[in-house]
Image (cartoon, rainbow, N blue to C red; front, side, top):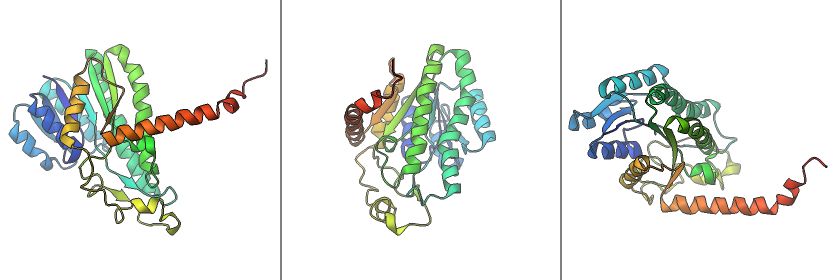
Length: 276
């Protein structure tokens, strides 16, 4: 039996993962900004679930969640940084305050959670950190520049973190989902207030009023949750877990295109060395 702490459990993938962890007999600290949205899980699993309020942009709540979860269950074995939301805007349209809040939530909130849990994982020489990214970090769609950027930042951080903690018996993994039937493209999706007409055929097509993907995504959150648990419990946890056939196809396409570009421009790139 392991103890998981999962952020953003009120809906979507976080909720599905919390349910799956508890159904498998593990302990879970289930968190949401409004703890009442996860109290039902604590009621259903009174011995193995602890529901706590957690806004990851609030440093005091981050510390308290780790402390209370540790006190209740003896330690946190798996941290899942899932809390977040979508944000769409052409780069020129993005509001500075909105973008900073996006990074505070997705990136700096995750960093604070990681820093808060690592001391106990280092002391035990065990633990797993799971950071939720998105296929958007690879395919960088028009209208998702800021979201792709914050997820790319998470991926870069996780790659370095994994190299730092693996010698200590700890691992870190990125989860890169494609489209799943959650509220991501619906209720939780945010966007710039102002739209610039010149971007109507690029970023504009992905604004909420023009997007028809909500409710038609190919991915099943319950199956994604099961896949994450399988990867965490594997003796060879992957560095990047890509979820969804759409994401795998897109990721493969990006890698192939990047390799082709690298080869096409290799002579120019290699011409920059100091002459002997």
